[in-house]
Image (cartoon, rainbow, N blue to C red; front, side):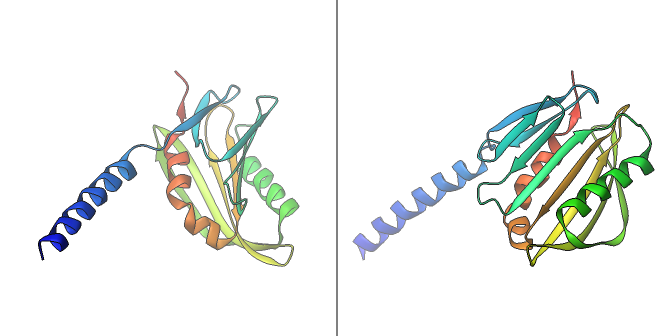
Length: 167
């Protein structure tokens, strides 16, 4: 009985240590969109590439989910939504928006999000188009398998929560 209690105390200590480690912030790398004067953080574990300082590609380690972000010259929301939809149509077939656009505010930045479903190579995919409004809006297009989206929802939320004005 004493041995079982000692083993249980040892396991509880390790469980507490693991919970503390899990609560530590995820390390991230930062990216700036100079034209839009916005910045964001992406998880260190994700593969991230910035093309010419304008287009950011982020992919989770299992490659089941990708987010592309880029700024546009036009400050018009409708033009930005059309551009985002064009990008989705280039990647997914049978893409269809579900529901109505949602509007949010993050660090004083207004954003509009639409989501839906489509297919890629015969696989079911979900997608999100988020437009963060600024003088030059930034369009985020995320697409991936529903399983990858569910597995990485915390990281996705952290990316979007990190978007803020530079400075």
